[in-house]
Each structure stands twice: as structure tokens, then as C-alpha cells.
Image (cartoon, helix red, strand yellow):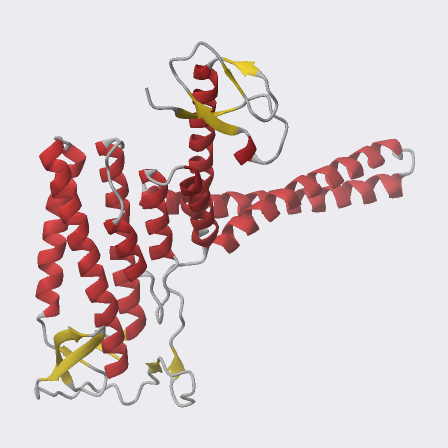
Amino acid sequence: MATKKGLCPYCRTIRVDRRIFPVNPEASTCFCPTCMREMEPKLAIEGYKEYLDSQLKIADKSLFVTCDPVLAYQQYASVIELEAKEAHALLGRILCLIYMGRVRKSYLKEALTLLEATSYEGCSINDFAFFLKKINFALDEYDASLQKKLTFRSYYYDEECLKLYYSHFNDIILLKELLLEIAENIKKKAASQQNEVLINLLKHNLDEKRRILKQEVYTADGTSYKFDRMNRGKVELIKTNHDMETHLSRYRLATLDNNDKKNRHISDEIFKDYTKIARAKKRTLAFAIMFLIVTGGFVASAFFLKSDVWFFYSFLAAAGLTFIFTVLSLINHFVLRHMLNKRKLRLD
């Protein structure tokens, strides 16, 4: 029988790779090559699986709770170094690439390449379909946010904005087509209600996006365009000569050109940076604890010096003030936590 990976529960080394070793699951006993401790193969194999699960949970928390896709990407990559075909980590890394995307630079092509190399073999069909659904949701978020950044009252700021949108939009369509292909392949292997819902959703999405691709669109100066094709990675447009008056000349519009001093600059942010909110949430809790301790100190001091009326009321007043700061810090903490939880629920 083929060997499996095991993890020694007894090693004290901080290097995890030195605790991992091949195990024969049919053997009666095995030895860790690092510390030479004897153990049952089942103990080592389960320890390895628990370690992988714990690392995946850490990466999931970085992505979905603290919303730090760069850190999560590195954490998923660490799991892939141990298990190259771990679908959960591979799909998580694809999600990270999407959430790392900006207005001027996306990682959708890299995400497409990774998705093409990801197999659902050895993974729960429902778990795999669930992650595919998250990827589809992230693509829709990217699309909506990008369009909002590059348009004003449904008009694209200029031709460059329109070309950039179509470039990313085409990559989104390619990713959704691959998602649909994978979901339909899964359907041939096993029935899954979640997968069936995903297939129907993707078909509807793709029909809608292909229809949008054929529509005539306008820039802020009233010029009309239609998407023609992608030629060697470049967007080619057709001017349709159905120009119109947009009445936007009185507005200060925006541009992708950072050297343009006349118009506003389009910020590069697509997804809200929740890492600042996550850090602020930790700080507000720390402040609340600190103010509460100081409040307790003032109260204790007031009763210790209660014989002196002036000190007694001064310390009580100070305690009341720091208690207000405690309450305000806790309110801020729970508001920020609610924002992060709301974000997490949207991704689930």
C-alpha cells in the first residue's frame, strides 16, 4: 500500500517540515526520523491532516475575516508546498488573486491559469462547488466596482477607460466560462444541488455578459463605440457614429492618466481595504481594556482617599470620564466587528 504523510506530535522543533515523514498506514508502528519517537501510524497521519486543516483555517481567516488577500495567498501557498493538489488551497489562492486586483492591474489571467490546473479529484463535490461559487461572486464584485470607477452617469470617462474595462471584462468572461465547464464536468461525475445552482447561475451570468458585450456604449464626450475583438491581448473598438450630446462638459471628469492636471485621477482601489478595519478593531478593544483598567484604578484610589473629599470626587470624576472612553471604544470595536462580519457573510 502507498505511504501517507504523517506529522510527529512529539518533536519540539519549530520547523514543521522536519516533523513530517512518510508513514506506512498498514504498519503496526512507525518512528519519527527527527526525534526517533515510536508511535502508531494512525496518530501521525491524523496529526498531519489536522495540521493541514489548521493552516487552511488560518488562511481562510486571513482572506474572509481580516480580508488580507496578500497574506492569505502566502498562507495558501505554504499548504500547497506540502500538498500540491490540495483543492481548497488552490481555489483559495485563486480568490486571493481576484481580490488583489486593482483598476489598472488585474490578476485575472493568472487566476485563469491556476483554475485550469486545479482538479476536483479527491475533494468533496459540495466543497469544490462552494468555492467555485465564491470565485464567481468575487468576479461579479470586481466587475461592478470596476465599472463604477470608470464611468460617470453610465458614460465611460474616455476611450482608454472603455478599453481597460473591456480588457478586464473579457478576462472575467473567460473565467466564468471555465467555471461553467468545470461545474458541468462535476455534474457528469456526481449530482450536487449546490453545483446545479451554480451551473444555472453561470449560464445566466454569461448570457447577460455576452449581451452587454454587443451593446453600444458612450464616452463622456458623446462618442459611441462597440466592442470589436481582442487582438493579441489588446482591445479593439468600433466607432459607430451614433454620437450624442451628454451634457457633461460642466463636470470635472476623471482620467486614468496620472499626468493629467485638468481632470480628477481615478483611484486604483477596487475592493475596500478591510485590513485597516481589522487592525482598528484590535486597537479599539485594546483601548477599551486599558481605559477599563484605568477606571478601576481611579475608583480604587477614590475609595482609598475617601477621607479627603476633594481627592475623592476628583478621582470619581476621572473614573467617570475614562469609563465613557471605555464605552466609546467598545462601541467602535463592535461597529468595526459588525462590518467585518457583514463582509464575511457576503462571502459565505
